[in-house]
Image (tube, rainbow, N blue to C red):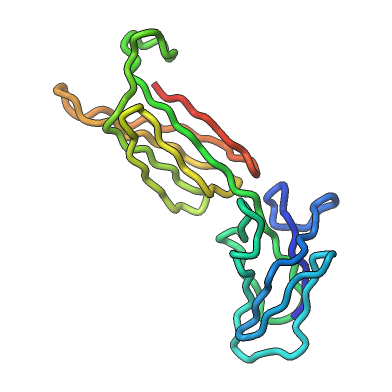
Length: 178
């Protein structure tokens, strides 16, 4: 097994022109391990039956990870994409006048839950803090569904608010929801 570990800047899982190799990343093949060279290359000469190829996440630069949907083969040549993760900050407020803008005196919307659903269908939930904020980290590039589940009021359950957001590699996004 041999291959290359590279930063997949556009998130397409394919090595494109301008995407840099990653040096010094530990790659494991069963009990064997090696580090990528200055060109991001690695090689295992003696195959291990039934072994699994994987990248040691502890050796990746901060904020980088092998995408969850990447499956590494046990034989042949493989390019291993690594993506830069992103963060999403969500700010919620009670839009008293219904204009979609946060005006003076409008309070944060606490006691809500915010969900992000990844392209593969996995959902993460975060409770909104007392200042109306929720934060998601470690998000891979892709199109997500953001859902706000407001707290029930005296008038009954409030309807969920849903938006589609696209997260680019390494982005720090801020989303405000009324």
